[in-house]
View 1 (cartoon, rainbow, N blue to C red):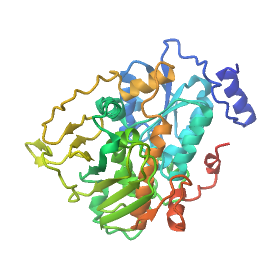
View 2 (view 1 turned 180 degrees about the vertical axis):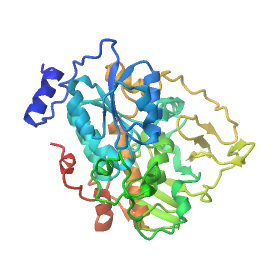
View 3 (view 1 turned 135 degrees about the vertical axis):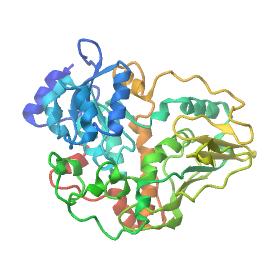
View 4 (view 1 turned 45 degrees about the vertical axis):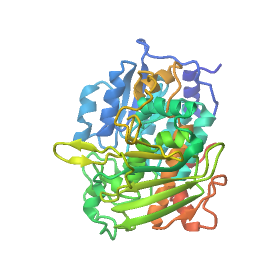
Length: 455
């Protein structure tokens, strides 16, 4: 079998990169047996993720990459790993480190996940991606296809998908406590303040160009999206507000509230996407509120069902009898982000976000049926052990990408300010050029086209 080091050396020498699934199955690790992790993105959430990876004791950081190494948000990682080589271009990092990398964690703004993940998988590295996986429907399709072709270990960073809700939800569906045949309606919601609310929906164009800060690699920060002038209005997490860079509330929180419903009720892709209750619509940043309703066709024992997504401070879902609200001394009673599941027998289940467990409305916070014990592994441990062949990841791309595609469909409705029909087999919006253009996304800038090919 072709060993990893020889393969990588040949790739770098010839510039060709064939897909050879399984060719890296015989991995070697550092002398201490830890997974060698290269990090793309090292500030903010990325720094939190890096600390969680290191805390497991299962990895060592061998490379750091960020487009703004001079930024204050990068100081933690740079100080913690002073000997790790540092780069502003992930491609140069992969070239330099080659076979000394086992896995890559991509923790950059939403729009730039895709090229780094594609490059890493093509080089045979296991990949961890912060959620959501990608910026467009098309990119999710390409990531899923490339993961399948290369056979590398993959994981999306919806961390609660390795916690109690995963094991409880699976057990409840398998034992009939949450019988898919009884589902009548699903709700997911997130009604906390968002970054773009400060715009009050009044945005009529992109921000004015500003002087580029010293040390920021603006070309790499933009990755493959169409050229924009630099503005601080995009930086330090503000990118999440803008359609061109972020995936809004759906991409940010959908992965923490819809994930187990989408997976264990086998929702797949919808046949229609509708949008209502829209306030503050504009063509540049996300609206102040909206309600997106996805219609899913019947499948197996599960009937056709609608999933309602609500975002916006005042756009709360109807609360069923017995619904338990959160409480704090500063806020009083409040509705936590989460999910509501309606069954035909009159039972209603509620749950919060991330890994929180479900309970029946009216029964208090302790469910009648105890949740099965978890594996005891965090999402980060689950990934690192999977890289070593000791586990299977809980949120691999074949599960995470279709979920992220659901977000992209909702975002298309937000951008269009209207709904559309969707063919889940053909994966297109029939006779709707505007919707299909958004699902495909803009053509990449020159130099980034190669990532939009699977072979």
